[in-house]
Image (cartoon, helix red, strand yellow):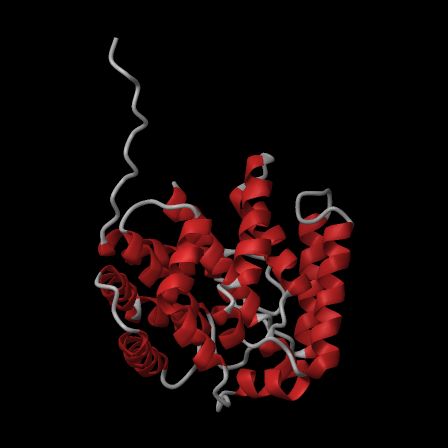
Length: 279
């Protein structure tokens, strides 16, 4: 009798990795009702962008995620990844006429695509995180020490919050320890994808030092958003009777306060990417 061998992990091309990233950005955009964020039918707390703006940005970034996976496959130095990200940001701004739709996702998802390219096959979230830190952790830690010239980074400095750069230097703890587990657990519990994603978004808002919230609403705005998210989940989340209506009510409150949890939205897109990468 022949010994049983487990099937080898499926190889992933840079095209596979990049396509999953693009689709995950659409997963986030299409989710509704999201508090203060742009959806296919709502501008949220934004006067300068809508779903069409996001789609132009998303399409402009398709090649970027493929290229980052290719760079990862070659174990490129961090400065090469950074140059690729800067060029992608310029393409985004050209496509949106100067509006920042996906700066955070360029940074976070780009790094994750590079890590996936380095692994080259389907891998667990833990392995992707370990690969990211092993290859580029020291460079990300050095980057996190630079003073930021961006509004979100400056808000993080002002209020002594953990910035997006600091999250990256730690291997995106909110993504891997909160958002992805929340999404996975709710999907395994039988929730529909949209419901599971909405709960994962609120779980992220509840704990993330979202510099976009701090920039738009100060520390009080950030803490208000976190408290609203915790209360939403404590009451049963999106899957309970009236859960979607409760989420929509929080959305109206965020719009009134001009709050937009953009960092949480980027983190949710990354969790959707991790889910797609595991399918």
